[in-house]
Image (cartoon, rainbow, N blue to C red):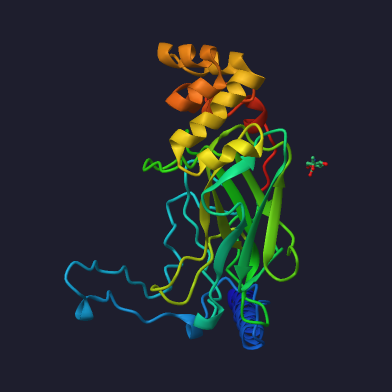
Length: 343
Ligand SMILES: *[C@@H]1O[C@H](CO)[C@@H](O)[C@H](O)[C@H]1NC(C)=O
């Protein structure tokens, strides 16, 4: 009697094993079909690694040049690389995380992304100050623009994909930072601070010209604007070769208050720009120039009037950072940091 009770249990177990392996096999076959169909549709349902996609690299040192580091190696595409760490899991984790997602489709060399700002132009010195809007425009090539996933819960959550035209599918961003009054600054701007940030979530003119408008503009000052181009899931775009031109562009520009007549001086650089700001201080908001600096000399210059300040290049500099007659401090009045930003 004992055996008659045990045997059915074993038979059941065997059936379960068969059912499981059959499920795995079906899943693999589904995965292969997705991959073979050229696809970006290979979203994957199996939880096992298909041997067909296991990379075979070694640590690279056999042919290394002096100073090259050994690459990590893996027999399983590093599928467990993040074990023991917080995985990204679609979130923008402030404390950092480990992302286990494959990097994805890489375009061909003749489909590499490149960018050039159209507006403002590099070193443009007469971008009108707030309340004038500023429209940033960048010309991209080889980006299927306008596709973006939910940045709140799918950040880095899927591989880079390319379209049927061979170009990366994604979007770009416009990110603007205050250079603290020095357009030629050699101090890297704090990446956690920006004067404007916006994802360009459309495909612009349909031919790679992508734009974002900063409603209400910027206070006078020196700024840098960069494109920051991403695949759909917001990861920086991956290109097929290391030696290439950058995929993004940055230009630096000066926002000036007052009328364009002063901008000629601005072309000469910071000293010229200070003249413009001095005018703003004198004509528009002397109080802001006073608030602008702790240096007594600057206050004196401002009191003497905007033009005098411009000549000295002192109060004007303060004005660049603090203009707009709001008594604003350090170039980022609250209204600018309080904007809603879109990834
Ligand atoms: C500034 O931009 C906003 C929003 O894009 C728009 O409503 C407004 O008309 C613009 N102002 C000017 C002066 O163009």
